[in-house]
Image (tube, rainbow, N blue to C red; front, side):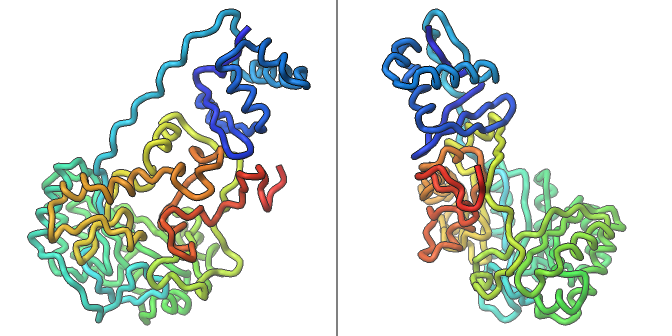
Length: 412
């Protein structure tokens, strides 16, 4: 008699334990190392031969029976044919691009990842190069762009770029603005060209919001613009960041978003990038949701996670200096510069390919974890939180020790 996991199941080994990924239900089931060894042994030999060598054969037989009951495995009288190869995943292609039009900003936020302010010196990308880049990115497959900064509305010709993207039939065009400079004519322009808008609100009051932005009056101007944008029927996204000065504002921000009629998830915690790389800014009570079970995964995500970094693959950011980076927060991971080369050369170059293919198999600790294809991974966050700024540092929000199979702050 032979035993195999069913075709919708995969066994992923860790350093101490393993996990069975049920790609039908999406569940990820933890098993101990002995169970994993048994399943691996059953791939090459009959159940009888494997169990004959085990002192606690009855326990392992019960385990196999349980897998059958849970529709995760099956017994076979004749050795089954080898499982078909896993589906091929197409190489990643460009899908989304951030354009940091300027490093200048009329706010001077405490946590700004690009360290923007009004008086910063910058090497600017010529306007014609931005226009050409939109053509190149679209030709490479990009369907979405976000204009960002600094403050993108400080870039004198930002409307030209929107019109160009619209003429190229980009499906998703968004401007991420602090909204303090939005005029009625801008709102009409957004609506005419189907531009989405994103902004940030740090509190439901001027005292705290303006403390974060270091720009008196910014709260009232941002809120007024937000109301006008929503009233015009333009999609508005509010992405809030929590740090020490505003950590008591989480519920207030959520309530304000509800009042505005804008969907908003829980605010993020300040990222350790740029001015945000300051331990004094970390909130004392508010934190990100920790990495913890139960995990869930779908087949596409499971197979993709073995080949690329799902958060990075297909995306690039281009800074005001022309540097190409894999994420707006990955400031040190420069993969090329559009002032010196074509976008195609950057996309096919080794630095960007390596970033896009930074799977959790490459990451410290994660590579030895059985949950590595089920949990989220943010490389810029891990790098920023690491003392040595290591791109392959372990995720800071995970308390699991794959070498002991224990969660430091959870009971299994």
